[in-house]
Length: 85
Image (cartoon, rainbow, N blue to C red; front, top):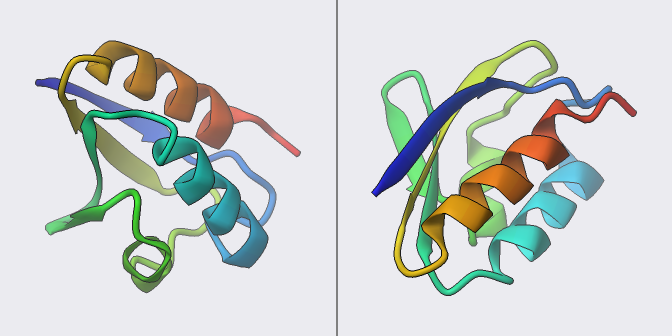
């Protein structure tokens, strides 16, 4: 299992379009991928789950992946949420 805490730097956080892009990227991996904010953890491959966390810019989240490509999943999703756009 791979786990990493990152700060969301996307201009609008993980809302609407950015959440959809995040979920789309997470679905490219065969590993089980989760995103955790404070004490809530949801499936990172679920748009409803990700949006339910209401992740704003500057929020720290933990990315968790378990599976054959877990490290690649963590690295790719970290780059995505830390990108300032």
